[in-house]
Each structure stands twice: as C-alpha cells, then as structure tokens.
Length: 439
Image (cartoon, rainbow, N blue to C red; front, side, top):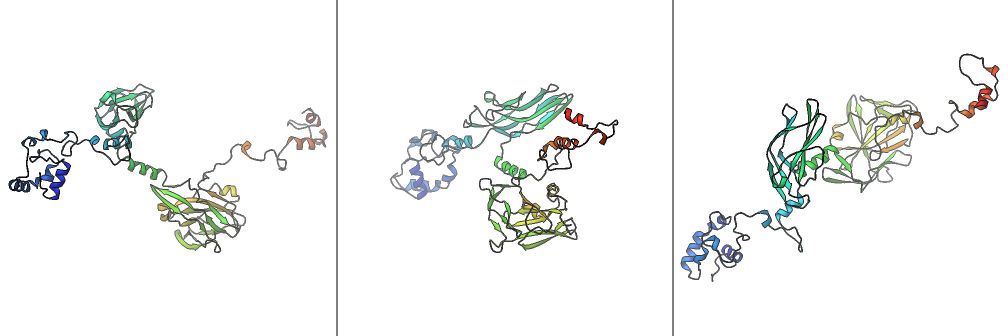
C-alpha cells in the first residue's frame, strides 16, 4: 500500500509488516477490532488504486510474512506465547513461567474422604494443580482426577490419602507413610482405623486463593505480632516516681506494619500520657491523661478496692497499633509477690482492648511503693506460671540460714551436748551419742 489512511489502519499495517488480510477469519480475536473498519476499507479500496490486495493473502493460512504460531491474529494464544517484562536474558519470561514459579501443586476442589460403612475409604473426584517432576520450577499443570472407592484400611493402621501425577494421569493414592514431595503428589487427608471405626481427617494441601488464606491464618493464630528484628515495646519505669516508659518498636497485624513511637510519661522527659480503665459500679470507666501508675488499689470487677498494708497487686498494660498505652488494674491483692505472679490477665476487658489492642506487660507492686517490684514483658514472659511441686527444684537448699529445718551438722552439734538421759527410751527412734558417733 502506498497511502497510509488513518492511524488505526496504519498501526495494523506496521504490526503486520506491510501486509494485512482483507477477509479476516471469523475465529480471529482481532475481528472485533477491525470489523468496524470494513466499510472504510471498502470505500478506500474502491477509490485508491494504490491499495493492492494480493489474492494469495485472502486465505489466513496462506498469508505472507506471518508466522502462524506467533502473530497477534492467532485465536488460540497459550500462556507460553505471552511474554512478561524482562531485563537481560532470564530463563523465565512467559506467563506460563509465572504460573510455574509463583504457584504450587495442591488441591483446589473435590477429593472428599468418607467411610463406606465397611472400613473402606471412598474419595470423590476433584481438581488441582500438579507437576510432572519433583522440581519447584517444572511446568505446573491444571488437572483433575477420578473418584476412588473401597480403599481398604486395616485395623490398627493409619493411612494417608492424596493425589499423585501417575505419568500424566493423576490418581488417588493411599500411603502407609505421610511422605509427599508436594510437586508430583500432595495430601488430601488421613484416616486411622480402630476396630470398626474410621477416624477421618480432611486436611487438604490447599493452594487455591492461598494468599488470602495465609493472611487469615496469620491473623487468627496471632492477631498481633511484634517485629523481633526491630525489637522494642518493652515497658519500664522512669526512676522512682512511677512514671512509665515504653521503648519504640513495630507490630504487625495481618500484613500491615505499625511503627509505635517511644513513650515517656515523665513531664520533664517525653511528657506523654497513658489511659486507664476501672470498674465503677460494675461498668468500665476510662481515665485519660495519666502519667503515673497507681499503687494503692485493685479492681474486684465492681469497683476499685483499697489494698491492705504490705499487700501486692498487678497492673496490666496494653498497646494499640496507633501508639496508645492503656492500663487495666489487677483483680486481687496478695501476701507475696510470688502469688501475684500467678494471676492471669483480666478475663473481662473493655471492648476497645479486645478489638484492637494487645497485652504488652505486667507490673507487680507492693502497696504504696514508688518503684515496681518487677516488670514482666509479654515478649519474654509466659504469664501462666506453675507452682514448684518438687522441693529439690527450690533454690538455696544448701544454705545454713534457715533455722527451722534440719541439717546433719546442726543435729550433730546439738547431740554433742546431750546424753541418753535427756531422752527416755521408748518405741520411737531417737538419736543417742553412740548412734550419732556411729554415723
């Protein structure tokens, strides 16, 4: 053609290397783009002798200058034909490569395990993705498999049910061991037989919508998690004035990262504040602008109660992703700090705390003290201690400063000043000088 006529047709000519078919095949994906140009082409062809259509190009299969497997008019484009943006000359360049590298073998639908009533397992047909070889970059193939019924389960055994590549015809497989390469095979579940009872666990290696489910699991297993590379979020106190400090840190919620600034409630320092909740007639009441931790009360669930002298209690501190620090009172008072350590975090908490806050620390104090007895961070302390049940697990057992218990040395010293006349002979066993010397 000697005369370009319009930008759209000109672009078609450029991409077609100067030769364009007039009669496009009905299955062509380009047909809809060009159909509206047919009338224009007809009028141009009729009025311009410079526009020449070679009869040999009317047949799509006979077009000149076209590679049948590559040109853009082809209607059955496959993923390996579509290239991705690349730098240099990587081995992975196509849409199929993207599928192979970014996704995994596994279950998508079906594959339901059930007891047929005769100690056999039935498995329904299903679909998934699988690879032909045990390689993380082997081509990933959509596939389906047929149902598999009456798979016998022997008494007293555990069986593991899954799908295997099987030379290109995926099928259900029942294994004696829970071993999978997760490329050429993957699990659907397991079954244990006890007598006539089959215990079935339907736990597929699911890969459909995997990003969504991974985020769900992270959130539901641990709603908030401290970034341990950054560290921080450690509660402390500023001197002996009951001011509160928190070191800067980062917390994750789902895939969201929240940076929390340092807190210092000393008016001469950061001049920050925190908030507290307390029960007033059974209802939580918020107090804002607090700078010092309270040291005389605990919360019995109805109101604040003034502690008795020398008693111990807890304060529970929570952080929010927006950086707010919130305190709840402990729920009782204790004779010893070790007993206060046994208290669990409050089970009844304000809606705000349960919705979007996380426990950061516990502070144990003795009534009216101006410094904490101890401060425990949730990041390095488990707040579920157990009492020592074995006397041998106690510390200081070798010390000689407990006058209320027996030691061999103390007994022998005492016995050295006594004689048999100090004790009357009887049916009970007792020490004598001779017996002591005999030791």
